[in-house]
Length: 301
Image (cartoon, rainbow, N blue to C red; front, side, top):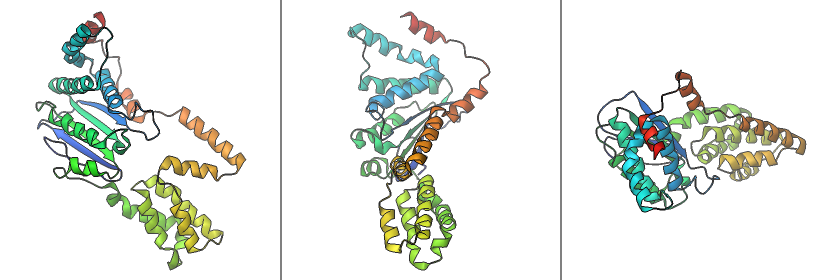
């Protein structure tokens, strides 16, 4: 789902939805981008509010070092009261808001993406309320947008409705998914008894096209081996809804030698992954930016 609202953060999360919230009325072509992914099998820190705050702060400050000046009063206050400097969650919240305001006031839009919000390791209403707070406290003089993606969750529905218009991803891609399944499983679907398989595949996908692609191979293969309709439907029910679990099941079903080769190829692919967005950004940068005055001042402390 895609959401766009001026002034406050609201939305209507659903399976694999994305929400865009904006603050302010100005337009800006200089964008500072940051993102965080709550990976379900990631570390506890990466799925926590503290981990997200640290990640977003680092990304924004890496691009806009001059915004470090906004943290100076907070930094000096902590340094004067603590023998060992410690940035607690409450302080990190204030720091992120201060940095976003500083970047906005210097003429840059701040765009933040939060993905898989439902995998947050804590009370979901807390992360939902923080998203609302983040937008409401950002400087109205600049432009701030926050995009969130999540599966359906009651807390998100409660906190994000009804101010933001939304786009439910699966509603937009369902017809394409149906066409893909019908094409891939055309031999199977010539028999009317097997047609309920199409709807079941779409329902279980939660709007994830890759899941549909992987799951669509199984009915065709099972049909060629003479499997009846009920067994095929039962087998479809055993397919995991998480992509990682589905990949794991596919690997487990391979012959031992094929499985070893597949794992080797996947390992090589994983080792050479490239952050495409970062790479595209890097291609536009011809020289290293000068070290900011703010960074020099902080380093001197």
